[in-house]
Image: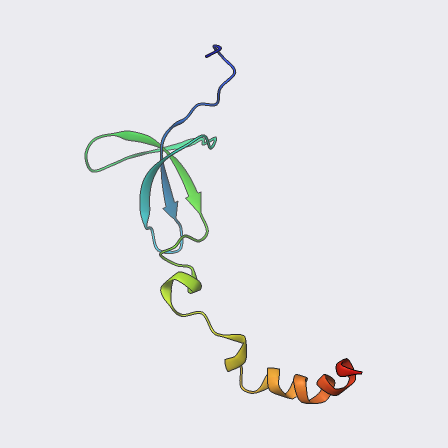
Length: 85
C-alpha cells in the first residue's frame, strides 16, 4: 500500500440528535468533535439528524399513502379515467 493516499479509516461515534442514540462503527467521515465513552475511549463524534432509532420507517410509525383519509382514492376517481385514455 502507498503511504499517504488512503483515507483515515477509524472508529467513529454516530449520535442521533433527536433521541441521543449512539452507535460506534468504522468510518472515514471527517469530524471536528470528540466524545468520551463510558469505557474510557475518546472517539470522533458525528451528529445525525435521523437514524434507525428515530426514522418513521424503522420505528413502525410511518403512515401509508393509502391510509391518508381517502385522498388517494379521490385522486384516482377524479383523474383515473383521463389517464386510461
